[in-house]
Amino acid sequence: MEKFVDGQKVAELFNLLIDGGVKFALLRNFNNEIPDKLSVDKDIDIIVNPDDLKLLRTILKKNKWKEVRHPWDFGNNFVFLYSMNSFLFYRKDGISLDICFQLCCRSLNRGEWFPLDEAIQVSVWENRKEVSDVWRYELSNEDYLIHLITRSIFDKKKFTENYIQAIESVLHFTDKMKVKAKLEVVFFKFTDTLIDCIYSKEYNSIVNRYITFSDY
Amino acid sequence: MSNPAVIYLSEFWTSKGECFRVEDNIGESIHLHYANLRFDITIEELFSLSNLMKDVVEQLIEVDSFNIDNFDPVFLKNVGGDLLDIKKVELHNIKLEELKVQRKNTLKLPVISSLRHSMMLRALNGDKEEYINYEQENPIFVSNKERLESINEYMSNVEYPFNNEYIVLFNEQNIIRDGQHRASVLMNNGVEEVKVLRVTFKDDKVNVSSTPYIDYLFRWDIPRIKNVLRYFWRLYNKFKTRLNKKIKRTF
Picture 1 (cartoon, rainbow over the protein chains, first blue to last red):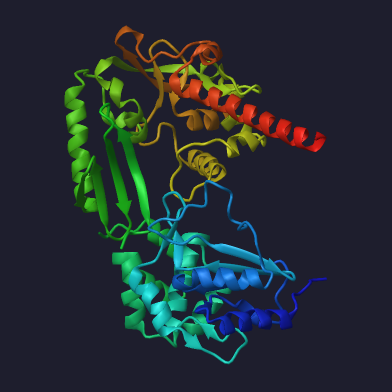
Picture 2: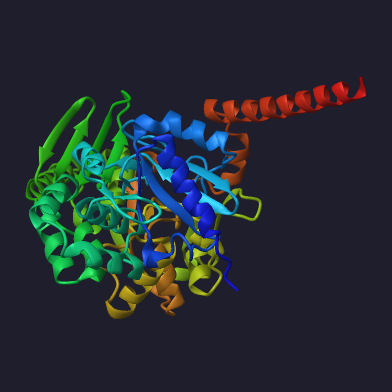
């Protein structure tokens, strides 16, 4: 039987961050698993403003959260470029907290972690949404869409069902021009093709079309 | 902003220690880096430049039978330093049984074996572990397993040689220098004899020792000496730490 983390403890974690004054946003919550249906095998992904890194560490340490090695850290594969902050991973009461400080993706070259354009990082904090759920803050629809697309293409190299559902849940609540402007600093001349593929639900062909794109 | 989709198409270091690199920045441009310089060009310009370079190489190599289209460009880059020493290029038939490959034995020592023992052929027959863990340059997002499967599938539908590219041998040696995948698939498909491209170099240059494990065991260059010293230094430090702990516990 699948074991879930204690929803009350999840709520306490978010309250801890809010009360401590840490500027954060929840990155993903597929199938509304947070707070009550989150499996012990899964983690909570949040983004924290890099200015609050020290504050975050102090608060978590004070509340007995244990910093552990990130599950993706196999030593030489865990490289962060362009002054990007490395991820942090904390555990307490069966809850795993995966923290990043920039919206990022893995480079296609050697898999190094790579922050998305500065304009997107600024937008994360300018446009984060306040919601009534226990996590209280999440990304704006446009930034969430950028996050889902870049993660699918660069990190997962495919669009999985969870990601497709999440993309479609926000796609029609986003400003197409704003999304385009943000995608352009990541995908350059491929942006129009990418947007067409997403609107026509041709998710399976995106990665292949991207790496074989030659109109530049 | 830098492009996250940068793919190194080709890279090499000159004898002066300067790097020449061709990068595909997907959706943006092709970057040619040489030392501290960078040129941005389009894909079309890259193809024009590539054709120009092909002409240059063909003119530099004054051997009538040399045809640049017979070679895989990645392979040509790897032997680039020796191209001017080519004396003769000829096509001839050879039995696949006579072909040999360079590989590592169970002791991880380099040996020359018959094609029958190549890891690609063994992988095609189900023994995939060594091949899957083997480090090689593959097309982007293609794993070793996928590469072998695609070559196998491709070769079932078209006839050898493909794009006029042959299995390449050097001098009088029957060791495959390029085309091990193709040779393995052909052998697996029951082919007995194939046409190969034999390239002869001046003074038998680029020959491979028939006993590479001896060369390996007795070749002591600076990086290898450094590695061994580093290993013993680590061993010494571990021993020292353990000894210190033991002394502390005792007293």
